[in-house]
Image (tube, rainbow, N blue to C red; front, side, top):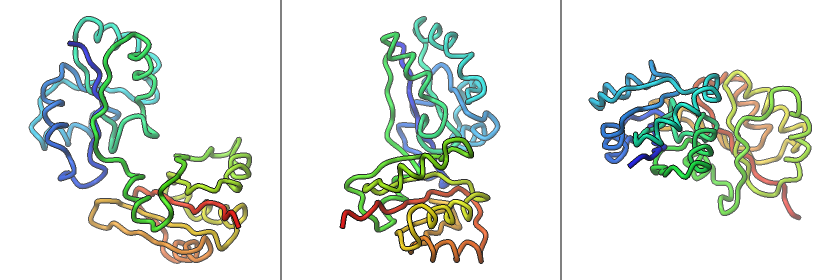
Length: 225
């Protein structure tokens, strides 16, 4: 029976791969990978020999129609990203939406997602939160900050290492120097680190120690007092 599987892959530590994810990747007809070179190492490690095809933000608009046709013909397809859960700041939404519109079964396996451990270990309220992903680079960035300045829920952002210091300085500008911030980097990897404090304190830390690796930033919401 045709089905699209969204399969999470480890964000760093290969031991976070689930037995079920390995089973699905071995049994499907095709694996769609964000970067076949990167995913090839993962598949080799787990002895998965399923055929793999490139599926990323630069070609997903062009390939959806053909993939839907293959699914309608009875094939099963798994979609993986470089790390974490597909469609979370990664390709996956367009194909998933197309499957839903064409009454093709979609199943997302539970698994690794970078923002969950970053949120939980931040020490900031996590009963209600908002996922922002990557902020706009230029156009719309200030507008987004002005809106987020009034947000009372804990906020989750993905930030590239070379933009972290700039982003923390912007937090001070728009949220105030005392706003609570937690920066987690290299989650599940050898050099995992979480730095917590006020926006001012965390900025000083990373000005003195330039960050490297994958980064998730958690920001406390505006106080209702």
